[in-house]
Length: 432
Image (cartoon, rainbow, N blue to C red; front, side):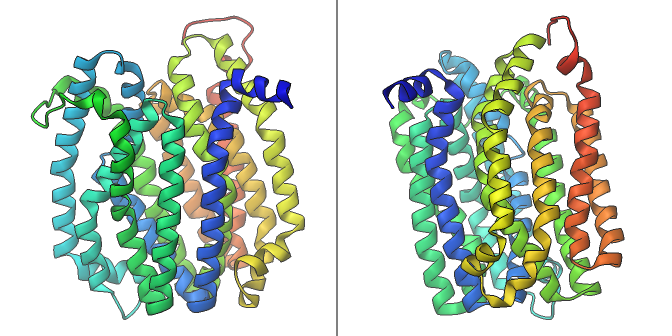
């Protein structure tokens, strides 16, 4: 046991994974409890509407921060020993995002009815939900910026604590609101809790505040914005466009199959998000900073191989276990009403396995700011997902949506391997 702990402490990937796994476990437990509450008090149809709202919130969060999150992580990590450059970067980010969030808040507030009608695709537009969202947007953005800064400073323990406290507080509020107001309570929780969690993050941020004592909002540098622009374009393209595509696909299911079937699709996507939390957060915490530092092909291959050797076997075994336990998972997470979700597991699991395989390598696009390649690949992938979903939904109903998910990432994996063929399989070392 002592040797194992020493090995973990020496291996940055394993050390990061061990810290990260604690926060992820809490998030998964919270997600399980929340899903059960939604299933019991709201039902399948309500889950579909909540899914649309959450996708829209993801888009709003991305635009409110201008997609700066990955850039903040990179530049804080790079400049944490150079206070002048760090102050310029953070001052520019805060000032720019402050202006952006105010604009987005006003747009949401004064177009609440139109937005609500599109998101909920029903006679009830829930205007007040969008108006609450408008007031919450600045707090969403501030929370994302602060957590990105803490991540960039490699304060993994603080990052984990923030996640744990946020999940516990968020769960308590969500359960109370669902119990009191059912669907409306769940919708209110979705738009208010991310903003309120800013205060949890702010409390933890006090531990690193000495880094930013001289930061001023007036410090806006055009050269800093230029450096962030690549990350902004890449992050906004995926984080803003993809959730909107999910709304279109879900609305297509509602209109051409049924609201109930759309709820089943949202259920399998929720389950997928739970087990993908570990890998996706580990990619952001470990792979992005590491790839940003790597400057030659051999080190890149070594890092990819290490990740595949350590993480992928565990992840693959976990997916196999999930498949064979799918009946129990559906009943534990939801209710008997959700039993048809069992039929959606195979294609979703296969697609998620390929998603992780390709995403590890694809993070090089972000780390090295390969904007043209990134947008080209993402645009192609989004188009494949949308049109494949429409095609297969027309043939197989809701199962077609998960088949499209698998087809999309099968093609995405092939494309990524082709793009990075020389970097992955070349025999010579070279600068990257």
